[in-house]
Amino acid sequence: MSNMTERKGIMLAGNILTDTVKMIPTFPEQGMLVTVSDIVRAVGGSVPNTGIDLAVIDPSLPLYACGKVGDDDNGVYVKEQMAHYGMDVSRVVTGSLGTSFSDVMTVTGTGARTFFHYRGANAEFSPLDVDVENIPAKMFHLGYLLLLDAMEEADAEYGNKAARLLAQVQAKGIKTSIDVVSESSGHFAEVVVPVLPYCDTIVINEIEACQISGNTPRDKDGKLLEDEVWSAMEFILSKGVKDCVVVHFPEAGMMLRKDGTKTYVPSVDIPRSLIKGSVGAGDAFCAGCLYGLYHGWDDAKILLFASGAAVCNLTEKDAISGLRSEAEIWKVCKEYAPEWVAQIGDVQ
Image 1: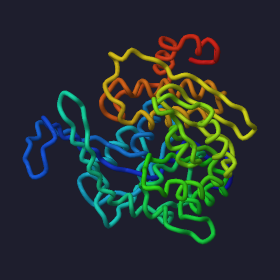
Image 2: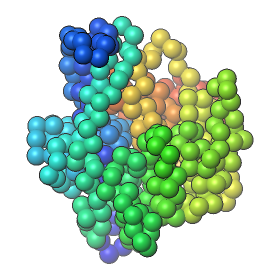
Image 3: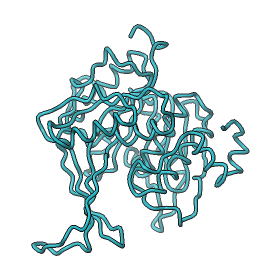
Image 4: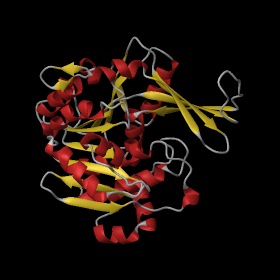
């Protein structure tokens, strides 16, 4: 790749896994038996979720998966699923550990869930698995930090391996972005802060933003503390993010640009009766956001579209089935957020 004008599409790098949802009548006490009534396998993780969402939004957009799976049935399954949606899976390599998975034990009736996660091949995925010299995409998105053990290893020059990788990608003139996973081990900021100087964009939720900065996102009653979130976003920008910080949460989306421009767009509000599940809603928002950034849309338009993508996701139980095409997402926005569509004007 000699210059940026030849690059097209988005590369999604990082977590690839399968979710096996097992339906049970109740959580058993330790040592006791409970019967599994149904088993459903689905893709999970940043790369399949965000990548397939983007493929559904726009089948003509070149999309590249980059990550690591095991030499097993789950690895074959997740690659086949991504390829089915038109993603290029030639950069998904096979490691020595099994494909990462989560067993999601779900109570029929209440929907209460417990996750049993196997880190597997994702823990091995390192910068050595990314052919930076030959990335064909215009944008490179890495997710989720805090579930990529080898990427979090110390690096004397950059702080950690993920920062080194993103620096190398950015040096090629490729726009970089990251997503993280909510995690409470206490070393959240020490993993994320070193990568920020090598990110053009970071797309996270309000809890993650405040974990990076040390702010408090909500009061004791659960009400969003908007000033605290803006403060967290300013802190993240001050640590070196080149272009913008995007924070999403159930009530709204917020964007802060390097030049200080702030944009706040309330979430598209669909009837509760249409909501079937929230698995993958953050990935759907991220996909909508990346799509808008890729096309250079105005900030309010990006946030509205990303919210529209997220609410489409809520209409199905799994992480990907609810997503719709760009035109269909705008239809949802027109129906449930007409005043914002009118304000933005430039939509399909």
